[in-house]
Length: 388
Ligand code: NZQ
Ligand code: ZN
Image 1 (cartoon, rainbow, N blue to C red):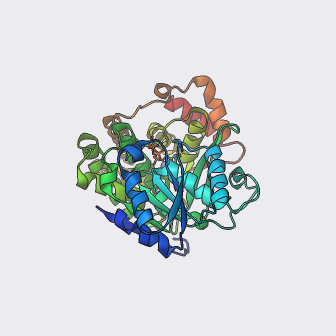
Image 2: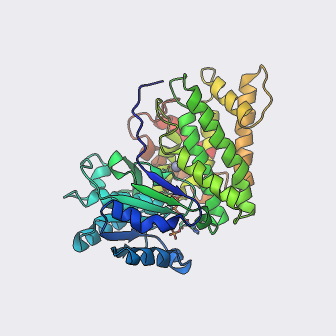
Image 3: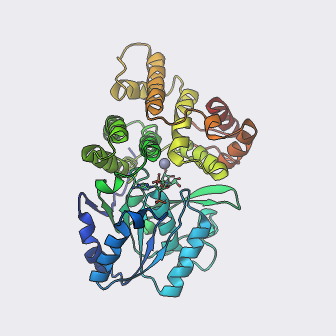
């Protein structure tokens, strides 16, 4: 296990009615003028926006709004948010929604302190030097953005979707009320479940090998998603299922699983390239790519790990033929995604064969990606072909 420094600064308020702490917590972080970031009119219609603005009013906190942030959030929304912050002397950012809203809010928080364009953060032209404090009211179990320092933004003009990672944009606090996720439609509940599982896989398939504790934690999160993902689909208002999924999403990508190891992240890099050209829902892309990626990387050197996944998580009986056991586990994972009614192939989500080279070029332009098994452009292209 590598050396590491553990810091998890986000305070999590989990459960029913935790929204009540909002005003007091913003004041604890010296917030006096808040930018509320959200997407569609959904939070207006549900009454959540009113609840939030009433709490701000009661606590003498002023606010302005940035609405219309899209899934696969665009850099132009970030630019607009920065302008609003500067015009209104905003000193605190509140994201209300899923990962897209939170990532946009985080990039706004950092962009306010940057003289150039916020896309500079994603092309290594500029480093984040400071950020406004951020909080989130999470409404979808998936990304873990509510407790991590990542932001993923799409630049339509540059045909790219890229990630920024810095501790400066880790939320100060996040409110996780499972009841807010009751209205998440089936498609996004399934996509979120696949995203949580993929985050675990990206860290489970890692080096070095002496990471027993991280592996046990990872398997527990996978079992949780396999148990509760299907329940949440069938019974959207099942509190137990929504609560377990919500907490699983946070734990899967808040660094808990990544301390002391090198993650892989190749599937995420390839999926971001697909979303950049097609606006595909992130979790759906991951569910399509993960089984073909597993089959492609499986070899004599890493069979043990895939075999352990099959036995410990997918309940394949153990035995001597480890390759066969590993393959059975991958098949079972693919069947699980199918049971969530996620499309199984890239062609089903509108990707054409003549787009595969472009995707592979965005994903692996020069260097290799991944660490469990390094992949170059040709490897990525092969995986895409089998996923088509
Ligand atoms: O516009 P709104 O109203 O928010 O609607 C959203 C959106 O249409 C809807 N939704 C959210 N909560 C709902 C709801 N609908 C009904 N009821 C609710 N309670 O769901 C749709 C998808 O929302 P989005 O925020 O896009 O989903 P998700 O949380 O999966 O975020 C995906 C984005 O996060 C990035 C992805 O690449 C993608 O851009 N990621 C961010 C990461 C991070 N920051 O750590 C890591 C991930 O790997 C990922 O890359
Ligand atoms: Zn993800």
